[in-house]
Image (cartoon, rainbow, N blue to C red; front, side):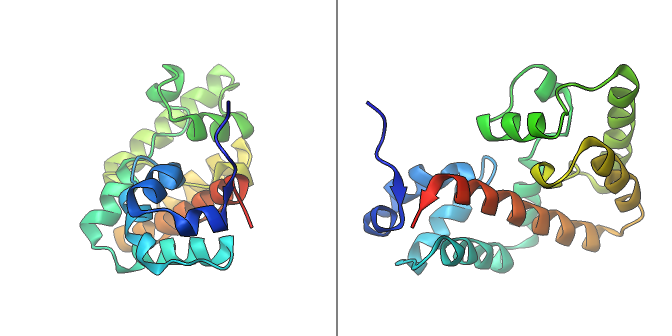
Length: 173
């Protein structure tokens, strides 16, 4: 027997623990974002639900933002190869073809991931469902020129896009 669908009415009636458990997938291994958004209930739309979660991120400390960013896996990295990603990340990376890279493409991702991690101290984040491997590689290269503050802001913006797509997939109004 499968779980009942996630509707706004059902989510709005849940206690904090149930709400956090139901939506914890939205922000990669970081259910604290969802938990803190619970206080903004009731939500009139998925857009408002997501807006409350993004307000949590806007108010979060730099340390919390960095922890959220660092909770994300590298694109086409070791965790992906080992099939150790969350179900959501695995599906998202596959949707962009990152599970079917040529040896040359894999080497390029590996090199850019290493350069990015060395420069910023966290993994490159992009909404892969809105991109393909060519545009992802171009963005990785281009964003290496950003400064730390700009790149944290861009990573949070991309996480916002990722979480919104995840919520739109899972929650009905």
